[in-house]
Image (tube, rainbow, N blue to C red; front, side, top):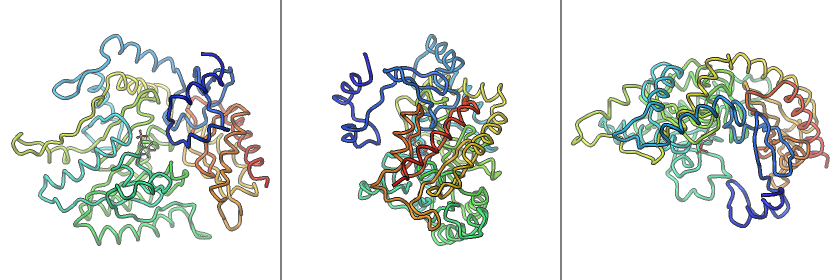
Length: 450
Ligand SMILES: *Cc1c(COP(=O)(O)O)cnc(C)c1O
């Protein structure tokens, strides 16, 4: 393998890339990465990029982290994989014990899966199956929020609401009930985020009351709708939702696949509302960004509804080949060790203040509608008209201009439409945060000039 161009050429002969119109690569260079270290990615021409988006929100403690590397290497010498039905292994047991200890109270059972979308599928099936086992098979509908994202397999896509991913496949998807997102970007003049949450919740409450007898679960991304352009809401919404679900006998599924493991400032986003869901889905940062692994956590009451003699046919007969893979579990254990030993959340608190300071000047930019932040996630929304908050037509691909500028300047800032965001590994330095903010500012200037 030699330089970027050679490798990209070979790649484009045989690969089909995710979330990509492949024809773009006739003019948009594909960037092959040779190695990673900390926040840095290095390509085959020797150019380096700060990974400002944690390689799609998975990386927590840098690339090639020595502690996680060591844990995987040791596990590799002992056991690479074994099926988890009828058999077990130490990394899965230790990880389950520790996840039960660190997640909100009441979540006592871990069902391992192998990627985020599959965790969502498992949670949806479990929720419906719980009601079926409890003599309520008519409770089979799911409620979601507008602008939500839960993955791209058919069930996960059905409970999501991002048109770009969903529209094409709509004829294949189950129908869901959709309530308006408590997204604080859509506040009225003078309204606080908590007030938006309360106002929007009234519509959710009406929907739940009307359909309670046929609803299995409500699914939410607590605090930040990440793939939905990093739109954020107040924890008050989650408190109201938890109370209504309890009152009406409806499950609450918290999709913390993106926001879990410290991204929002607390270990899990649900903590900021002081709630525990009936199903919590975790993936992405679970292995520190190393290996595909996911888990659904649920309380003992749910587990018990499946526990019976074999002939009752109430078991949850769902499986994936790589469920609970030992290498993935060992990476996850090393990740939890780092959280435990390094006081990561306090450190992140300081970093998130630096992010706020570094990006604050962008609030005055004539084409920035808002700079918003929840913990270690900071998003900058570009608009055509600041006062009216008129979006740029999507066809103009303004975010892509910022992306290309950032690559030249040594940063990976892959946008979401017209939203530029920072969601960096926690090993980023204050100086690197300021570098990113400078690159974003010039990029936004260039992208909004005409
Ligand atoms: C990424 C993501 C998923 C899907 O996870 P995959 O591992 O990509 O299938 C689900 N929900 C949320 C909130 C996500 O950000």
